[in-house]
Image 1 (tube, helix red, strand yellow):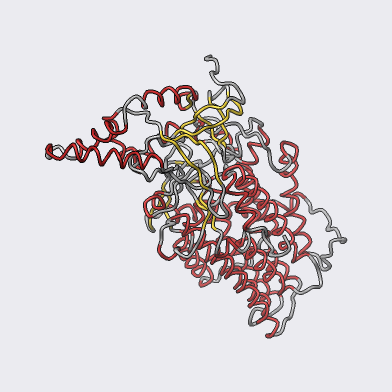
Image 2 (spheres, helix red, strand yellow; image 1 turned 45 degrees about the horizontal axis):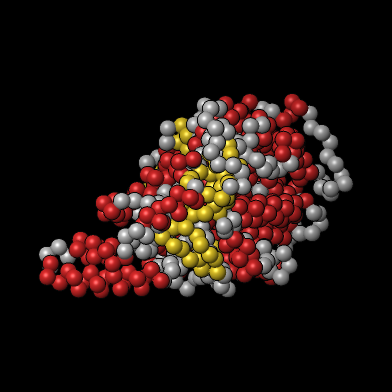
Length: 606
């Protein structure tokens, strides 16, 4: 086993992945297994680098002394001759003028943003690929010498040192092309290291959640079945044999594979996701909305042939148990296959080395069977579309049980609001590719249970509650609740659209009015628009909509508002998680962003 060359705390020069730029960094740790150094840049950004991408400071000083032996005028003359080989009679004058220009340029410093990036321009914003880009054509490498701070833009000055021979300068434009950068990223980007910071209470917390989550679902559904669903009125435990029926499990399997069939249909565009740690981009077929249309047609055919959809209501508990059993089996399969996955394909959040924790959070980032992406499929298809089907079944069950010719206004509002939410998610399916569920979290029990059980059976809690506890509301109250939902939806959709459009194409003329703080990753943090109002405006819209979904159930019991309480707790947890992740990722830029945008979710409150 090779010994490490650089000690912890040593200040060295580290190469930025995918580029030829070297920056002053400090070694913080060394991974004996992956043979990677964890280094910290001056802006707080931490990356893992190979030993070949690290050089001692003395080597740069040596190169500086070598480069100073040739005069600027001789270098300028050589450069001018290479540009004008056909004009020898004026070479002397051009050499003198170029020498002056070079001396003047040498006095000027290159300004970059707070995180060692060039100031935003038309050229560098189009690249937006997570690596610093140099806007000066003759720059090959940089060393940070000093740092100055300004209110909105942090400026850093650099002195240049050439690490390449003259003939290699001709190939510089190719190196900075997008194709070359991604090729370089494959070999220089850090491989997923062991997960050091455990979430959800670590091994003990995740072990308990694996039992607590299914128990919570059964408790909520049992409460809704009671005449008095107060929290103090604990429901009796159901008999085990009443929780399972083979026919119900078969129907669930049929539903799952029907959605898989719709997913495999060669319709809809194919797009690329965000770059992975090795620089690769996975392809995804965007056809979720088509799957929803086909599902609606299939449900319509069943209703035409007098299929009783309220069968879902009668066996709702059994369907939830079947979905939980399937999600557990799927989680076991996912973990077993992840043991043979390459290191670079493991999830950064589920690679702790602890079985329970990795099983819960997900060990593999993007498990696929051929081109069938299991995580992406479960994220939007079976559970989200199933949520709408369950709501419709509750509406029909209410009409049958209470002998209604039309569903109640409360049930119509709940169905309409949540239908809008699902259709919006499927219509904007491409946006899910930028979420942490896809880019950061592995696919394990947490997401499998959440997608297949929690979403369809807990998110439909209001509709399930209204079947056994009808609530009458007036039209003015309904109009007020509708207005609340519209406000929440507008904030949610406009904030997400603003973020996704900026991520995809920050140089879009439609976004010219938005201001942002550049970061060391090459991405920007928006400080205007919704993201300059609070740090997570999409969460604010989510909470407002969740409240509107519960208001049609009245105020007789707190049970319908469980979703609101859960959603607030979930989003506060996610917000804290995002804060920690962004602070590690963006360093000093995130601290400046937090100073500009002090409120997290609720303006003037939190």
